[in-house]
Image (tube, rainbow, N blue to C red):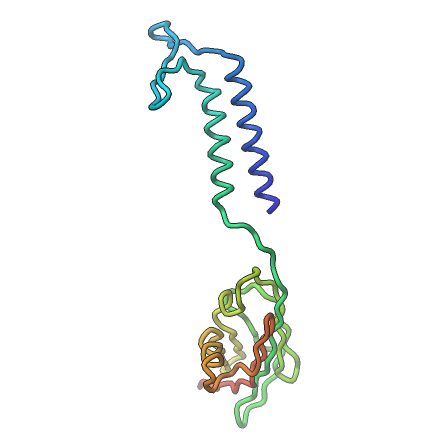
Length: 183
């Protein structure tokens, strides 16, 4: 919200400067005709203009309206996502040599040596983990696995088999995901 206050301050400054310039009543003369510049405005009539003063007022009004139209920052909430990865049959995996990533990358990811993971990060209030993250991916050489978070959460909500074991207000716990070996 700090940026909003800065924009409002700039808008107020422009409006004040514009009104001060209007009150000073400096009229600008057209260089071709040596006559005061006039502008006809609907509902107001003809004005002998102070272009710089009007520009200040217009810019200030635009900045205030633009800032007001933007959605307010509601803050962020801390989320925790947990789960584990399971080795495929007959494979031995050094978990720390692989990479566990989220798409898009915006969270802190911790992968333990036993394949369990914990993901922590902030999400704007009013949004869910599935609104912000599309996938959790693990890859290690020829071994990989993926969790499509939105799809799994929809299954969980529909009481269908899902990788989501439990879901809280700011928590998701995933069942173990068996990785796939690609030759």
